[in-house]
Length: 585
Image 1 (tube, rainbow, N blue to C red):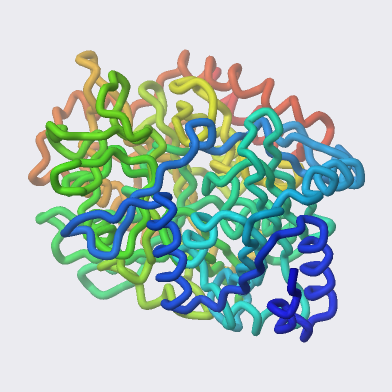
Image 2: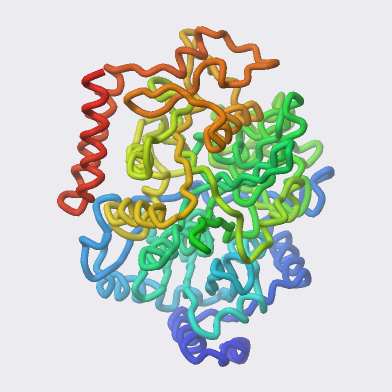
C-alpha cells in the first residue's frame, strides 16, 4: 500500500493524519485521490462497464448509464441511522442515539481490513458556492465506484474542495463491505465532524455529501449560528412586472417538492418565470437582517417513477445526458430507461433486477436519476451567487387525502413554526418500511435533523424573529381527493396559482378569510381562468372542518409530548391557542 497518493493532503496536518489513519485501518490495495476531472470520471465509467456494474444507454440518453444496486440496498434505512453523542438528550426522540465512543470503537473494529483487495477512492467535495457563508467542505473515502461517480455529479469535487479545507472539514468513510443488511450502519458523529457508513452503497446512505453532511451534520453545526439547514426546495419566482420573489418549501417524500421546484408555468402564466435554486436541500443565512437561501448541492438525486413530460417537463430535459439511472427498468430494444409513469411499458423489458419475468413494478419505486444541476434549463442566475436568494415565502406541505386545505397562511412566526412541527404525510418508498401510513414529519426534517428537534423548533423561531423583513409561512396540500378517489386540484404547473395567491398576500393585494387554522383564500382570490375545477370541490378543499381538526390535534399531541420538558413552552402555547380556536368555532 503506497501512501504517496495522499501527499497532496499534507497542507492540513489533521486532514492528512485522519486519511492516513483510516486507510491503514481498512488496508485497501490501491488509493485514488480524485480531482474532479473528466478523465477521472470517464475512467471510472470504463472500469464499471468492464466489470458490468454499469449498462450504457442508447440515444437520446447521451453519455448516460444504468446502475443496479443490491436488492437489499435500495433506500434509506432509518433504523440503521444513528446520531452519536455523549448525551442522549442532545439527540431527542426522533433520532436513533448511540454513545459516540462506543459506536466509534464498534465501527472501527468492523472497518479493520474491510477494503483488502479493493481500491479506496478519496473524494474531496465542496458544498455551497465558493468562498461564501454557505461554503462547507468534506472528504469521503469509499470503495464504491458508483458512490465516487455519483459524488462527482452531485457535488463540486476536487481541487475546489481542497481549497476550502485549510481549516474546517467533515471527514467521511463509506465501506460497502459485503452489503450485509443485518450489519448496516449510517453513523454521524457531529461533535467529531465525522461520518461512517458500512454495508451500504445506496445514495441516501452512502453519498455522504448529501443527507449525511448537508443535512444531519450541517443542521447540528447551524444550531449555534444565524443559519437554518433545511430539507427544502427553493425557487426564484419572477412576476410579469419583473419583480423577484424567493420561495422555499419543506415537503416529505412524494408530497410534491420536486415538481414544485421544477414547476413549468402553464400557458395562462407564460409571463411568469420559475427559476430553480434547489430541488432538495436549502441552506438559509441572515444577511443584513434578511433571510437568504442557497443550494449546497451541484446535482440532482431525483425519484424517477412518476416523472414524465406532463408531470415534470424540465426534469425530463435535464436527464437526457450525463445521467446515472439507478434501479430503473431497461427497454432491451432501444437500451433506454423506463419506469412507471413513462407511458406504455415496452414489450422487451428487463426490470430493475435484470429479470424479464416479473409481476411487481418494473422499476423500483425508489428508482433514481443523478444529473448535474447545470443541465437544468431554468436554473436561476442566483444559484451561482455567494450571496444566495432573498427569501419571502415558506411553504410547508404534506401529502394528505383529506382535511388539510389547499393553502392557508399562518397568523405569526410562532404559528408558522407550529404548522411545520405538525406536518404529517403518507409514507413512501424513499425509506424502508410500510408505504401509505400517515407519519409525523416536522418540516420534512424528521429523518435528517442532527440534534433534538425540540431545540430545532426553537432555533427556527429565533432565526425568523431576527428578520427585519419577515417571511410569510403557508401550509399547502395538493393531494385532496374527491368521492371518486381522484385529485381535486390539478397540481403540477397549476400550483403557480397558489404561489400567486401567496405573493398577493405578501403584497397586501388580497385579504383572504380568517379561520381557526389560518387565513385561507376567498374563492375569487384563486385565479381559475382556464381550469376545469368544480366550484363546489374548490370550496371543499379551501374549507375548515372542525371535527377533523380536533382529531388532527389529538393525533399530533403524543408526538409533541414525546419531547418532554424540552419542547419550547411557546410552542405548547401556540398549540393550545390553536386548539381553543378550533374547539370554540
